[in-house]
Image (cartoon, rainbow, N blue to C red; front, top):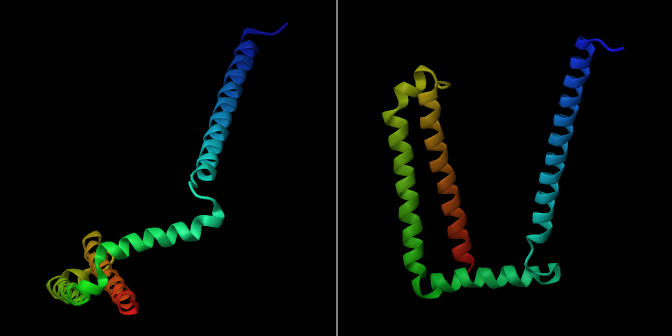
Length: 135
């Protein structure tokens, strides 16, 4: 016959197994939902997808009126690039001492992150200008 201690041990083990099975089934159910959502997420047949993307791109281009406002778009991009460059310079100069004390400090890393984001933004503006030049 089982002692009271053994009964509680088996009962505890059974509860743990039930919880484990529940967690595994919930995880699998969630995974199936995610996979199902990805598969069902396509509203267009794969053969027609390139045409749908092209149509969406044309909507963007049409709304920009590139032919009519080319010069304005170019000036805007150039001015934004100058603004980003000035901001990079300003952040670098005004925070040089803070950054040089400890470049790995939280405050210095925040400033460096801002500078890097501006650099990335400038690169994006260059890409936008290249795209505009092709049109």
